Image (cartoon, rainbow, N blue to C red; front, top):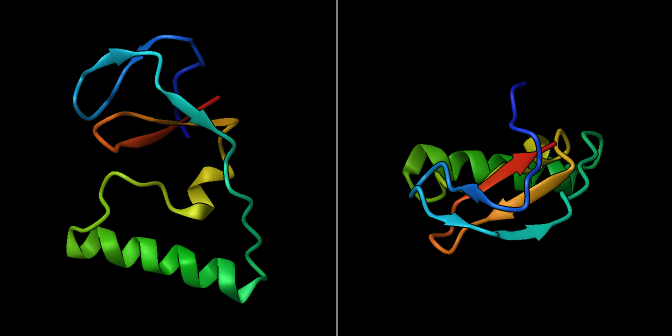
Length: 79
Protein backbone atom coordinates (compact mmCIF):
# COMPACT_ATOMS: atom_id res chain seq x y z
CA UNK A 1 0.00 0.00 0.00
CA UNK A 2 1.39 3.37 -0.98
CA UNK A 3 -0.18 6.57 0.20
CA UNK A 4 1.02 10.11 0.53
CA UNK A 5 1.43 11.56 4.00
CA UNK A 6 -1.29 13.87 5.28
CA UNK A 7 -0.94 17.58 4.53
CA UNK A 8 -3.51 20.34 4.97
CA UNK A 9 -3.44 21.36 1.29
CA UNK A 10 -2.99 18.88 -1.53
CA UNK A 11 -3.85 18.13 -5.14
CA UNK A 12 -6.83 15.96 -6.02
CA UNK A 13 -5.46 12.91 -7.85
CA UNK A 14 -8.48 13.01 -10.19
CA UNK A 15 -8.99 16.63 -11.24
CA UNK A 16 -5.77 18.25 -9.96
CA UNK A 17 -7.53 20.86 -7.82
CA UNK A 18 -5.28 22.32 -5.10
CA UNK A 19 -7.47 22.72 -2.02
CA UNK A 20 -7.94 21.96 1.65
CA UNK A 21 -10.27 19.08 0.77
CA UNK A 22 -13.00 17.76 3.02
CA UNK A 23 -12.03 15.12 5.55
CA UNK A 24 -13.86 12.23 7.11
CA UNK A 25 -13.07 9.24 9.27
CA UNK A 26 -12.74 5.95 7.37
CA UNK A 27 -15.78 3.70 7.61
CA UNK A 28 -15.22 0.63 9.79
CA UNK A 29 -15.03 -2.67 7.93
CA UNK A 30 -15.64 -6.10 9.45
CA UNK A 31 -15.04 -8.93 6.95
CA UNK A 32 -17.24 -11.24 9.05
CA UNK A 33 -20.26 -8.89 8.82
CA UNK A 34 -22.44 -9.83 5.80
CA UNK A 35 -23.70 -6.24 5.44
CA UNK A 36 -20.16 -4.82 5.27
CA UNK A 37 -19.17 -7.45 2.69
CA UNK A 38 -22.30 -6.73 0.62
CA UNK A 39 -21.62 -2.96 0.61
CA UNK A 40 -18.03 -3.63 -0.40
CA UNK A 41 -19.16 -5.81 -3.30
CA UNK A 42 -21.73 -3.24 -4.43
CA UNK A 43 -18.98 -0.60 -4.58
CA UNK A 44 -16.74 -2.92 -6.58
CA UNK A 45 -19.57 -3.79 -8.99
CA UNK A 46 -20.05 -0.03 -9.44
CA UNK A 47 -16.43 0.21 -10.57
CA UNK A 48 -16.98 -2.52 -13.15
CA UNK A 49 -20.12 -0.76 -14.40
CA UNK A 50 -18.32 2.60 -14.40
CA UNK A 51 -20.65 4.07 -11.81
CA UNK A 52 -18.36 4.63 -8.82
CA UNK A 53 -14.80 4.89 -10.02
CA UNK A 54 -14.07 7.78 -7.66
CA UNK A 55 -15.08 6.05 -4.42
CA UNK A 56 -13.06 3.82 -2.12
CA UNK A 57 -14.57 0.49 -1.15
CA UNK A 58 -15.22 0.03 2.58
CA UNK A 59 -12.48 -2.61 2.81
CA UNK A 60 -9.96 -0.13 1.35
CA UNK A 61 -10.89 2.69 3.72
CA UNK A 62 -9.72 0.73 6.76
CA UNK A 63 -6.12 1.04 5.52
CA UNK A 64 -6.09 4.84 5.93
CA UNK A 65 -6.24 7.34 8.79
CA UNK A 66 -8.36 9.88 6.92
CA UNK A 67 -10.45 9.95 3.73
CA UNK A 68 -10.38 13.12 1.65
CA UNK A 69 -13.16 14.25 -0.69
CA UNK A 70 -12.74 16.75 -3.51
CA UNK A 71 -15.49 18.94 -4.92
CA UNK A 72 -15.35 16.78 -8.05
CA UNK A 73 -16.53 13.82 -5.89
CA UNK A 74 -13.25 11.89 -5.93
CA UNK A 75 -12.25 10.25 -2.63
CA UNK A 76 -8.80 9.02 -1.60
CA UNK A 77 -7.08 7.92 1.58
CA UNK A 78 -4.13 9.45 3.38
CA UNK A 79 -1.99 8.26 6.27
